[in-house]
Image (cartoon, rainbow over all chains, first blue to last red; front, side, top):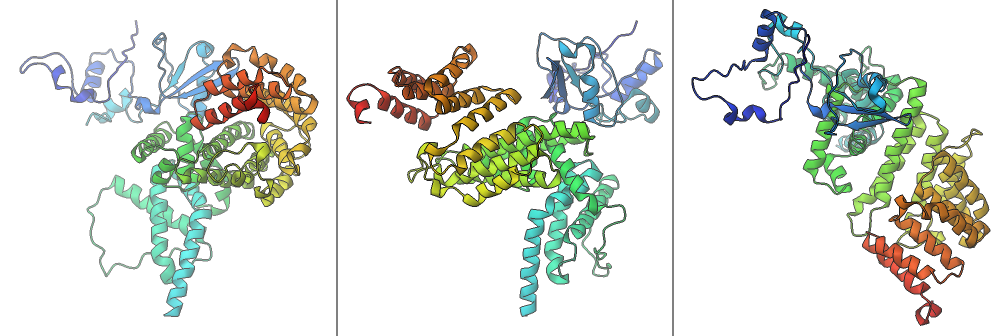
Length: 135
Length: 426
């Protein structure tokens, strides 16, 4: 069985000291992205993964009555929930939006198009030992 | 010494001309190759700063745009190298060789294609994946060359807000990789529809500025006309021609739109000698070039505006043709505004009763119940039909109006239309 781990964070959550465990307590969290990726790999459970750019860079696509509607930003309707994902590699955002507008549920749901950070895919992180943004 | 003063003056004038006429092309060429609007803009600023120092001393280059493009490209490359290999800054050594003379374009920097680059820069700034207000800000900042402060003042937002909006938009262009390449022909035509909408939005923002607001807001009309001229120069599309003609015609009435006290003057009562006859003539010539294809919404609106602008008196406006043009406009781009104006034109062409009949579907539409222009048009047509219900209709429109100036105007009309002593004297 494959599982998708959805990684969510508030913009300033890294600074939240209240969330840290008490001195000397191990809460099991691996605080370094590269180390976590390596742990998955060594356990033989890693299929893939990658960091996204911030929600600021997202574009939401809907197709209604044959017309393409674009919204600058992530989808915000709380009644909608994630039902799957595709990762595609194309030259630019316009091309990505063209593919997003052809997803089967584009007429009824929303496709959020979020760029992925280059060099942050699990294979590259394992090979280089470094994860962008983990500084 | 006189030579020095002249050289300064020449260089200053050349620099100003280059800033207005070549800046967008220089930026576009560099941005397209970097894929990063922020870095490109920084490099262009530096290139102009370098020109301000060098042109007075060394003379204005034969091809200022090529000089600036090459200089900006080198500055951009320097910045990229500095990003990758941070080196400590050091004071310039007098023994350093003078900066390489920038005369010819860098090989591979195709300055001839700068026109395509400007068009692609406009398309990037108006990419529909960016929020409309970001499209407007980016276009004014990077195509028209306004500063953050100037744009903020024109849109009545704090400068910090505007700057944040621009930084975020440029970040999205870079990170989400919004393309700087021209799309294929079909897609280009779709995208130009959006670009024209942005230019029209900028114009409207300036046109709707009221007398109490900073006078710089009205500059947005000139900026929009400048942008429409650039678009028209870059691609001969009949709808772009229509947009430019429409903006020229609307702006031609600018001087007559307000009285000495700054109040809006209704169209029928405007002093037509204050209309800009040159602009009207220009628009007329532009519209004569659009060809035989079925006209789009901007051409139709421009044709209507031209009929208004060329009628010697309000009584001589050809309402029959205007009503036909509104029929066509309602087919290609139906909207409440078009429905209302179509009914008013029908009322003038064939009588108020016909106008009221044309307005009926809009009046029955619950979604338009609070639409002020609809109720104002209803009142106008009732008044022309001699129906005493006109006063109540004017009052309804006034009650719905949010803008104090508009509300005052509608209330005056209600008083004037009211039966009794007040009405009979008016």
